[in-house]
Image (tube, rainbow, N blue to C red; front, side, top):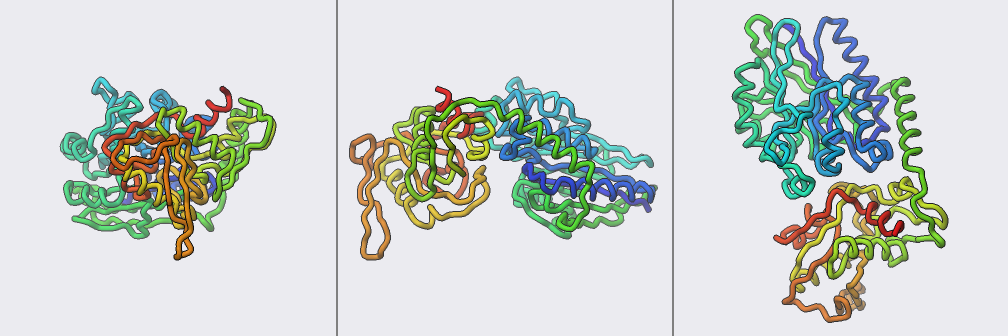
Length: 460
């Protein structure tokens, strides 16, 4: 009987505050495995990069890969943060210095070829000849990938093409799946030959794994608060799997790798220096207030409308985390106050639909909403700010403010007319505004983020 250890991380989202602990845990665990003559691997399941952090912003994720090299990852796949928050050329060169293969079968270039940095699978052979078939897929946000110049395939269709050939070569099948728990469960049902599914995307924490159809599903949460560990026991003669156990290790009380902490601080210093050159000069403060109109939020709404060419625009004041003082402005300043990986977009709505969205946005519940996800990296949504839209309210007997009238560029809103509204792509993705999400007419502007629009406005 032989033992194999697999350590896995997912959805770090550049939360490097836990990285020195992860480094200590992984290094010490793998050293012990080696002393026990037991082999081990370390995999990442995507969304290691998140441009909310200065290190990832300044290097477009290159420093993330450098840190993964330093920890000796054996393989990784990409998440949507690598895939659709980086410009085409930045993703295409992201792994140029990677010391590990990127396993990804469902991403293609426009010519139908897989990018040179992505492998549809990898066969890892242990010292006794035991073979691990490693596959990888990522979530297929087609409109976003296409806008950036990529072709993304349905992950299930991709696996139907790749998996049979890998299964013929391997004794044990592992998939790095940046699809989310629901789709991981579907994977286990549709592909029972899979032994292990290492999951991500929905930030699920499976403390002891989850068994479905004889397949072990795993997930280590988010932000590096936990590191996953799978222990496999197999018969080295028959190649049969005797036992699989999954666990997660909390990093809260884990010791810190001082060496990796020092490297992390060095990366941060370099990154801040790269972002610190002035790009504009303000002759007065641009202030922001989350629950009322202000100069800065009005500027963001105006920038959004100008960039996208909509008839009007709408954006939450909470997108701006802080004011900008009078004086020089740097990329570091714009990144600090607008860290979200959120792209601008246009959406076409009928007047009655737009009115319903405005009413929903005007509610106290929406303005006070505290959320994380869909790219939003702020504290609270705040007041909806408009450019080209004038909204009047009145207080009714229930003591609440209600929308009493809406005009678009000085004209009363026509419920039967179509309007092209510039806004944030996050509103097209999730449950915040279902009317926007269900609109069949959307136009995304990529790879620019909201902070790029602010830079464009300030420098022009």
